[in-house]
Image (tube, rainbow over all chains, first blue to last red; front, side):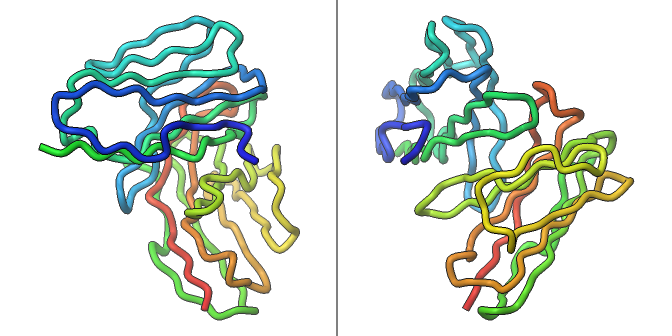
Length: 111
Length: 113
């Protein structure tokens, strides 16, 4: 059983559409991170959210941390083919880089 | 600035053999952590080293071990390989172990036949 549940697992959309990826848990995390991974490469950190209710924006990507620090969402506006990839959320409970990863959302954006 | 370097990129081993994977962190980074990525289980934490000491360990059998050298380079070893050990092994480094961003390498793809 995943401590962090990501949904949806797969998403195929047309260029220009909006989408939201969810990351849910029954556990409280001290911080939550979002990564993007492309084939043949390691995950690349997009953002870290630390405070409950925090919202961070990275160009067309908006990240939100739930008030209770148990869940998070990633919203992409006007998706581009370059957004294609595997999106991973990861929660950290204690210091020590011991991250718990969600199962990932595989996004495909068609031109 | 060079990124996290993992060698080798690909490895094919037979059941029962052992394997050693290497990770060179970003210069100045003292924390190195290892993760296993499989299609079924996703990314799972193996262990983390900081200043040559193992600080955290995930829920993996004792066949999985690691170490860190004084220059922060790290190795992980898997003994008595099983088919289920086939995976992408990812190494990540950070400046320290307290909220510093993780930088992942591109991994070592291990296939056990």
